[in-house]
Amino acid sequence: MPMYVMDEQRRPVKVEDPTEWADWMGTHDAAIIVGHVVIQGVLVSTIFTGADIPQHEAAPKVFETLVRYTNDMQDQERYSSWEEAKAGHDRIVAAVLAGITIGREPRC
Image (cartoon, rainbow, N blue to C red; front, side, top):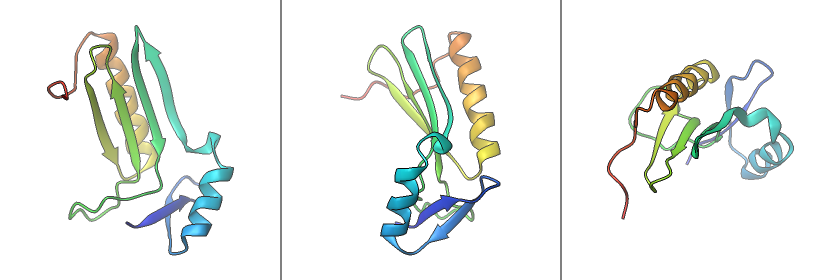
């Protein structure tokens, strides 16, 4: 699985050494958080994961929003850039505030 860190402009930079990746991730806790909020028991958390799960897309998807609803439903979205992740986080927060569930069917 391809691994990434972020540069000073919050752009993903690919790294080959797992130790370098782990060291960077371990020392940048606050830097990886794009957004984190709990609204009436619904968690919306968007972070830089630093790991890409290749899906035949041109740009690596190294940011992720995780949504956990109070009824055990959850959903996630992945993004390629900080800007996309922030926009996705804000859109999901707005949907939660409006009472819209963006998730899939409950997981068993």
